[in-house]
Length: 177
Image (cartoon, rainbow, N blue to C red):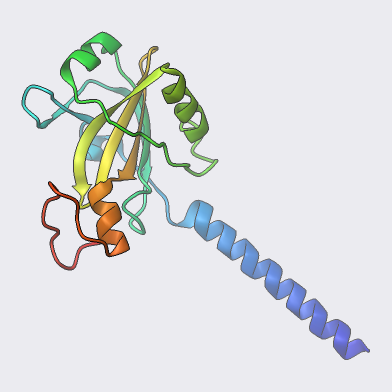
């Protein structure tokens, strides 16, 4: 009977340790804070040139991970008015903010998503195909807060699923993603 208790205790302890390691890896281990100075500028795609252009930002905070092209998240504020943003930059058709880790508390995908649904926030194309099949999306609220995430686009979705690429997709570089 004692051998059974020892074996069960070993299994339970092993399972708890494995669970703790898995949780840590998912929530903390693969994310790194991004240095604002080395990041450069938050960019939006101009409706006039079709090219990404840097915008003014303050209080930039970001996290990223080498383990996935869609783990980038950022928050900042900008003095640029919503009218100026909508007059000059390409809006993003179907923004879906992706969840970030709870410890990165300036970014809350639920709140950003709700603001987008009610029209309190507007999403713009930051940089199309920042990595093949992944767009950088930038959303703004009326009070000047900005949120950034990476979102798989239609080309990426088709490529990652092994489906034929939709018309208008660039040719993927072999060996990427």
